[in-house]
Length: 162
Length: 195
Ligand SMILES: [Zn+2]
Image (cartoon, rainbow over all chains, first blue to last red; front, side, top):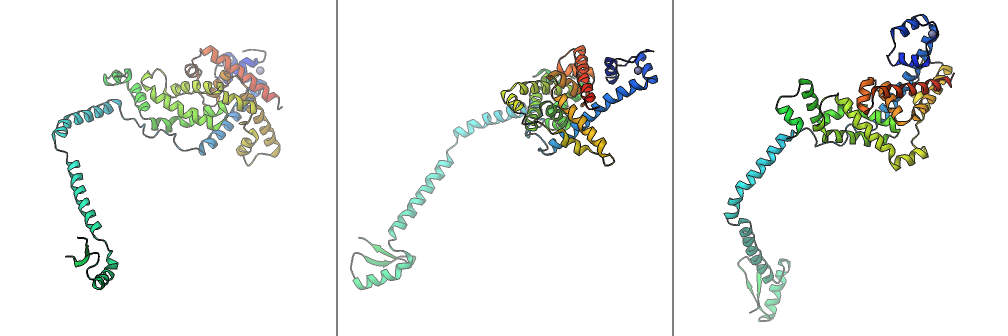
């Protein structure tokens, strides 16, 4: 056992868990050295407590998880197989797609025809339904004016321009 | 196929290493397990909650991207700490950090932290003494040189072993011990100032 007190460096070694049996032997019998080490340990513990407190407080004000969503561990091999399968599927379907008629375009043509027909019908109706009674009145009074009013199949009066 | 995957598929990883590799594959679990630890280390090093958050996110992103480089020769925690150490070092070198450090705008009030730590049975005199001790300690640790502070934080806050710290920081064990002794000397002086 050392007869003199432990040095500051030896106190630090004790705190770092590196004390030799000789140092430990001294500490069992030397209250001042124990007090010195205790004081240093108290300082370190106080700092740690404050550090934990501050960190917990800061962390509590932040979102639970960093923005890492979507990076969940899908194994890279599985992902590569999935991509390869998708590419093969597209390649396999490609000949059928190229050889087949173009139904989308055909549908578009049909709907165009219907639309044009509807426009023609609307254009030919010169008088709105709400004013049909007036046109009837005008045609009755004017006789053969700008055009004769006839009765359409739907009950509407159509101006014939001749 | 990447090296790590090859080893996994060839069954050449030990169960422990296999578990570590699997841990790195699930980034969400990785974050929830180690986030508070990495954030705390970054926060105490940088003293800036926003910058610490940024470093923490970068750390997990970098770890996930580099997961195939992980050889399992240290714990996942040590590996993450190593990545965080590099990111913290880069952050402290940034002009933005230097500017705010000079302006001292992110300084933390140690007194306010002490207030929150106050236990009910403490006498006002004792509390004032502890508050002053903490203020001295807080400032002392903040002004330690970068590596010394990192080593101090990893040992006395994260309670890592000297060998783990050496691995995490890429330093020799002797250098880590030397940093620890110097940091403790500074702590002792800070404590003496409050006697
Ligand atoms: Zn002694």
